[in-house]
Image (cartoon, rainbow, N blue to C red):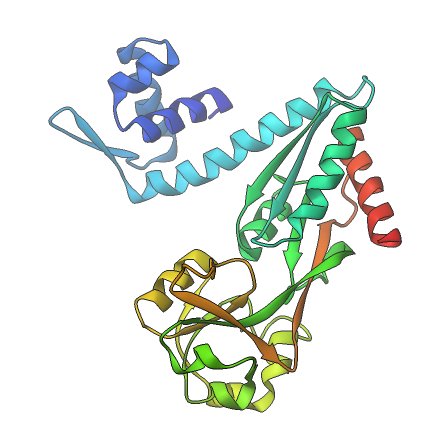
Length: 298
């Protein structure tokens, strides 16, 4: 199989129609149908089922769609790097970032670089730590911004001069809404909604679990999440109280939720990470140099 065939396949999967995909690709419908049939024969699996002018992607097709998109993204990134290799500092920088106010520092670095090098472009991929690490390991990102707790052992890392505060997101009509701070003992009998990353026991020196200590084994975790917005919706539905970082869920005066900081105070540090022995483009190297300067000088 070649990249063009994979691009055809991804387009069909997106359009869910041979006719619409053929129009989008500016090729004939019989040509596209033959390409998809040849791909199915090559792989020995059905990628789509067809019925009454509709097509539906199969389980094998879903897997191929995921892998094909990765290959196409990598191909685009590779072509981009070689396009700018003999030029001055130009090109694209790919950064993955979780939900954090630490992005403000990254945005300032972006702004300063673009003022000096207007042909450097930045692309942000938003996701949780698992998503970002996966794309880093596949070479689809140059850098990742990880929020602690996170496993940094397999990466090079810088400590950003920023952090987020942990606390409890609760309804304004709950008994906790009147607390100025929340201690671990207070949470033992509460129904808790926790970030899966925060309670991951495989992360070395997990500061969140260390804060709980032995009390975590007694905690009543009724739900977990990887995106804070969804956690906020569960709190609104009165499923429980979410332990989350500040500023990720709206807790303004007109909102029905509020934020109560943990005590003793717990801060989630931020790190810029990249693959060990990674070869940087000139634009990515410039970003790293600026990031090092910010991290060393605050």
